[in-house]
Length: 201
Length: 239
Image (cartoon, rainbow over all chains, first blue to last red; front, side, top):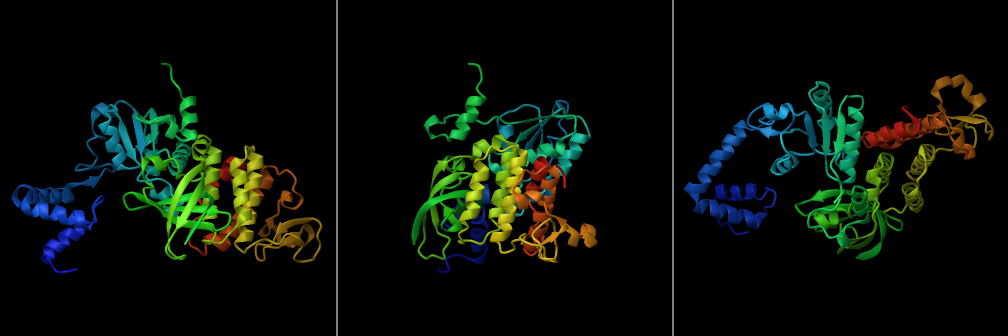
């Protein structure tokens, strides 16, 4: 490829291209946009990234990401008194649940699912810390909000096994028809599950 | 290059933002991988789950390429499996076992056994027996089959009660006596096809686990699947 920009710009393009949703072409567009908006966008973005790099850490309690440890969720007194702990696979799932305004609940991020193909075993997930957290008391219900995939549900069963014997109610998210879902396009297993979990209308 | 056929989904791996690499077990082509473009879409999510039986069309420029799959669902079993802990763990373990087989090497018998187990509504004893027999079959297909036809020491074909951990051959009760607990117990149902009890199942899983560990997991530096321990505990109690 012909040399079109200096090494600093080329490096910026290469780094941006490694972001999710970006490819070389979109990285070039983003770089050009940043250069054009040098003062109003590039400089604040660089500062924000530097601050995030210096301050963001993983919460030692729930494995969420925040600038404080323990994170803002774990130290929120409105949440700690409720006794509901939602177990999620990833921080993105935590953010999704927070967007849905589930209420004053606590979270625990597992950090993935058990996946032998990817070499992820129980010791690679935050299962031991979940166990310790529940054993410490103050939790009355653990909600397993993992993906409705074979790997996600296997992980949920494994976590349930590990929590066996603890005086805590264990629940999981309902499976069924999504909003906007057309019955004709749903798989028979999901339909059967939705029918079984039907509610009064 | 292209082919079409039916297969069992045994695993998926994310590839980029929108695609996945699908691992399927087919009767004619064995364990076969391919890229599914758009495989991470909401529509394909329910289809591309381990345990589902699908129609596959594979296409590549050269045979040795990864190639691309198009997938249509035939039997969507995954949601049913997720409702039953034992079936879910069984499906996961069987898929993990199938991944031990070499790529593109047909193992029709193994696939038939897996489909029978997945379809079955057997109780814990029946499921345990089927799994133990499947692991024996897997060892055989991987080239490490046990020889249970006669005693390694005396040649007798009666009262075979143990297996030599060294040779993988059966040993009669009398010949095994001097070696004590160093011999692995041969559960009766492997020889006579009878109904096993929990002790028989535990002995069977100790036996298959020992040889899978020695010949497969350890040489490949992989840990025994955690689902195996959990499933065995459900079916036969802790080992």
